[in-house]
Image (cartoon, rainbow, N blue to C red):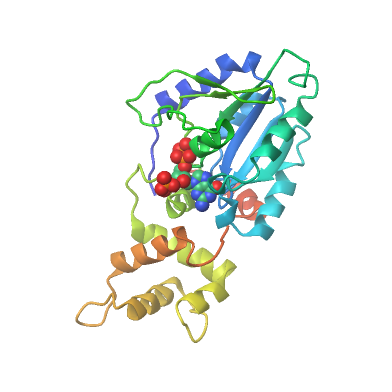
Length: 289
Ligand code: G4P
């Protein structure tokens, strides 16, 4: 799978974060709880050093709660990092986020203190940054530019309770150094901007679901038993959904789209596509050039 971001844009975003950093008290990094590792921007960890950081595992309503808890524990091994599983679309946990900012930056922004906590929001596109900012601000704030051609200014949004949000306009793309991360980003819809081959993505999804959530597949697609291979699963879906050619073979692209779209829409239940052990193993494997 080939996904190429523009290095120039990556560096511009990194530069913007670096420039703003001296006045930033705390980072709020928004991740997609279904892919907490692959939805990170790895440059961030290098840039922020030991600044306090809240990682929001957002869209947790679509992720497997047990896996979300495992990821939270994994991230919190770093003393500067605290996590919250959020569903900012459902406007949940907003107060928890601001309260945690105050706990992690205890000397600023308290009642009677005229200084404010500067909290910078970071995250790759589509993880829910704007939804979060709008929720925290209590109104709709114009989106900073995610599109390559759009250059907008950094935004500062004053909240109640002594917090200012800093929203960087740069594009924090994920760095995909293992093809499985690319497939997961495509499967969850995080990278719709780039053309990806849905058939490849569907095979990767099928392989993972057969291993991690076989019973969900059996339920959803009324299977008599767990298919033994990805193609067997896709064929079963094709038969069930009538996506067949006249000769009886499946319309692979159509079936691929069905599986991906049902995964994204939550019809297979809350699913997390990666766990710490899996990604750590992948990190030791071949790196995409
Ligand atoms: P961004 O600024 O990081 O690019 O993300 P944005 O807030 O635009 O959110 C991207 C999509 O994710 C939006 O859906 C948004 O509603 C959805 N979303 C954000 N947070 C959550 C969450 O916690 N749970 C769920 N299930 N979805 C979430 P969209 O389809 O692009 O827009 P819309 O139809 O909701 O308006």
